[in-house]
Image (cartoon, rainbow, N blue to C red):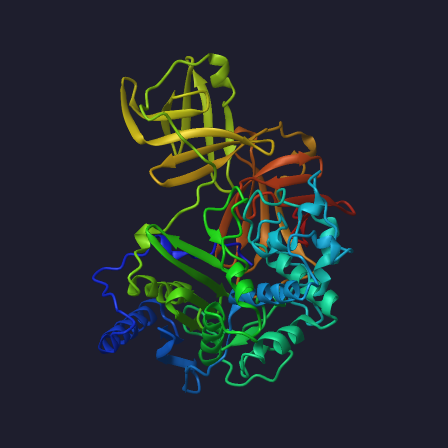
Length: 586
């Protein structure tokens, strides 16, 4: 249940002494394969991974596939390329593919509002236009719909089609096309759309229209097909932990696959990309899926297609398509370089195995001679500072426009005016901001009363976007948003009465990572914070007061914009978070 960002290791991968293997050079493959085997064995030992399976496709040929360790450690059953695991969010490309099949048939238009196809969909929008929530914005996670809804997510009778009724009391986090907010329940709405349009239950549609046509005969949804060779799953100590598959099937819950079947999937997509006719989708449609589709999304520094992450590189025409997935206990990653007819696929069955499968897949990029250091990074907003970097004098009133507290989900920055100068407070350090213009500043680190250190490569600047006054930091090719200015209100008696610890009651979600308690308290400068007590530790989040009964998670990021609601159950204060109810402990 813990909200985590996808572990995109490609931006930081360091490959020392990596050889480049031409696809025509078969004599190099043995060394390449040995390198991969050594990598897997080292990671399995260091990260205590019980079982791994993997494959490489180069030049449309399967040059290697293998299994390592155990699918069932207790009974000494080895992990093989025929071993099925739950692939988690690596199943999302299947949902996107299904939607695009329907578009080819003229049954949907991904640029049309969701309510055109799912008219019962409603959500509190805070004044945002619900018609801006299109199928496309849901596919690329820019709809503004929250990430998850935990109520009844693991009940045996829970259905992905239940999500639409739960959302009527929830709130949109941000207007569509403003922020990338990864949303599992958004994909459940896509699955519901598929069901509504075709009359086929989502798992049956995927089985009949994607898996079976590609002869992925051993893959499917665990409760809808009799699957064999299913791996056990293990915790970080190597102990068996039963994987409980949740409600949100279209987000990847419950879709099991093995290396042999995923090879068929990757090879078929490569063949379609290169012109194969009469398959599950047309070549032009697949190329649209692999095309950048989030250029209009302001806050997203990754490139995204339809259901895939995309990587483009400077001075290189290749595009890399990629999607990892994790159930916490099992992990998967699929990477395809369509132009080179090349792919890598990694699966494992142990918590903590996500770095292994992701780095394993992404190693292929440099193996093919593509430099990861040249990846093109999206910037949030255009910025062109003065080339001279000369500071200017601006009015005190201009400086006052930027004073305030800027909050992200788990950090804050303060901008203060001190003796007609703008001072930034961050991580217990102080910086003098000297203006280049009214919105852009060079920073000087304040070392002591009389000493400053200029940091010429860094620029702070401010932008007003959708009624948010946002602080950015630009350093070289990298751009970071540091939060929006929060209107911090006085904590009145209503909210002071709600401060304290809360315990979850009612529906109890299952799974490895859950939270049982929460604590609401006052932090510095009248900012409210929420501490959630997860299985793996305690996590603190910044909140802003929206009304007498609502707090909003700060930050333009995952969880940011989500609503925490309060009410009464008899004489008891209650907190409602993502459908779960917590009661205040007296």
